[in-house]
Image (tube, rainbow, N blue to C red):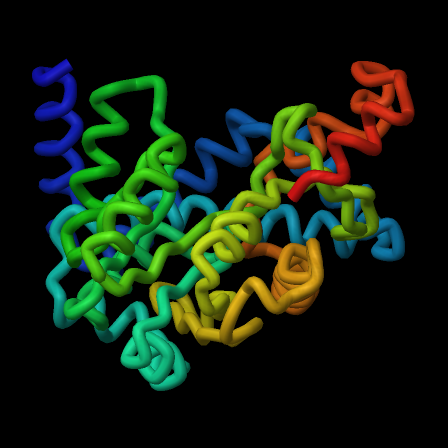
Length: 309
């Protein structure tokens, strides 16, 4: 594992030393390989686009499809750039707005939960920590099966002060910070597909009844955090702006599932504005309501599962 990790890291580091202009030439080459030749997950992308945008014609969906693969290849080289990019260049390319309101709440001792999605470059969001070095800034991650790749991503995500928290350790880490009086801001990529027994809430999202994780809302209520949504924009190639949109000052005062619902509304609005920047190759709807009912035929048991936060 150590040998493979160093092979990955050294090669990524050497490639990352290239200027962004050169990396985008590589991205354009990747586009030909990944999209034109390999047709990487093309059937998944097309199914997701067709079900999400039934009102669009085939020509419109094909345009989004091509733009998605161009962006996806950019995401790959931008993530490689994270291996060596300087703090100065990262500050220029990945900007955060709305931090004044975040700081106002943290200065009052409030901890903060941040909803995020697989939209724009979520890897560059790991630079958030260098903007608020006085606080614990964490990001939840799902451990990769390949140990060498997992170690590589932990390395590059931690370059600017953010702390990667394994999903299963989330409560333990946050409880430790709270017990030590350490104000914290934790980001959750919350648009992933849950397992059947974790399907507690089914909002309409992109024209489809969608099972959702509610863990972000559950943790926010447990610690009564302030809650924000990170609204990502890509004004031009290689530049991102993340605006912190406040959802509430104190999560416990919110109705059940209200925060989860608001998150999906905001994410859907961002996707509708610029649909190419969401991760369409993800099998987001691989587990659906029909499968849920088939696995759990008893209606009362389904209601019991869905009654949980």
